[in-house]
Image (cartoon, rainbow, N blue to C red; front, side, top):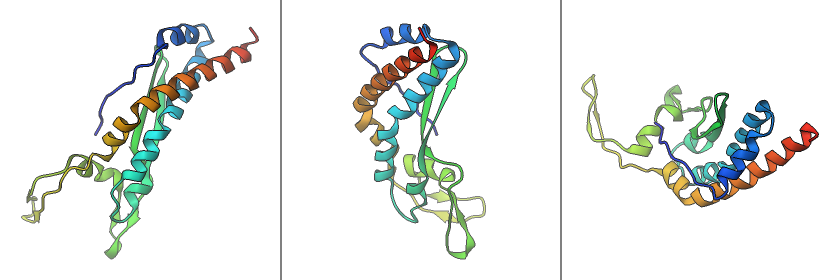
Length: 159
């Protein structure tokens, strides 16, 4: 499950021009670090709002960032991490990344392939709510950290 969204930063044009002047390897690192640090409030808020049944979903919430070499593109994702699982009764594994879409989007009542019935579940879009609540803070932090990373990269080049 993914939702594409973005933030607008006041001085983004000027920041991107400054970013384009530093070496290309430093550009990706500066942008990726800024995007990663700016998403911390979303990750923390999502973890605090995650529904708790076994606690596995709440513990698994984290963030991951990636930058692409072609162009100034950086992406950050908030959601369940891969390696978190919880052993339930009967030695059954409960892996949050396998059911987070059901928690976020909900489901209708129905039957499965074996004829078993499953109940309806209301949607609890805790990740989207946490992003919407933190959107302004994310934009402010992105601008701050991008400016800091550009300054740091300029000092590292000796210009």
